[in-house]
Length: 131
Image (cartoon, rainbow, N blue to C red; front, top):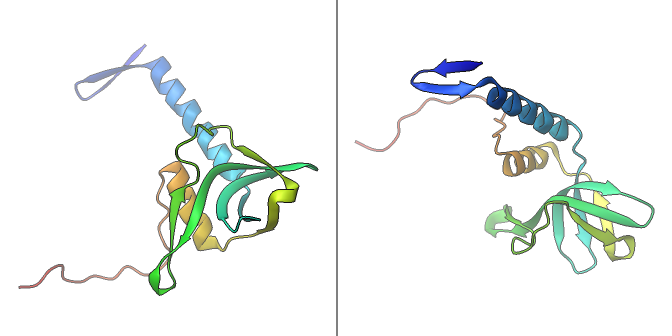
């Protein structure tokens, strides 16, 4: 079966695969265990964390980079490596693990899923530019 969208024809199997992928990504986001992991080296990593008795697995890892004026930035941790399945780190190399605040979790979701989560703050109208 084919579906017409404007001038484009899409097979039902393609739509079904896309729906399944979206459902899978939504489940993954709901099952995320977002944590800040401080390594013994001093690196602070924001990641989706799984833990066993012997090691931690860091998925979708972003290194936290301090910026001027008390702000922070993110960069993909080990961007030069293929770590799609995460990185296993022995527990002895982990200094501590803490829970990030809600805004940091939203930022993580935006960086790793491509979905931008809006702030709950008010919408302010204003003028752009000068006359």
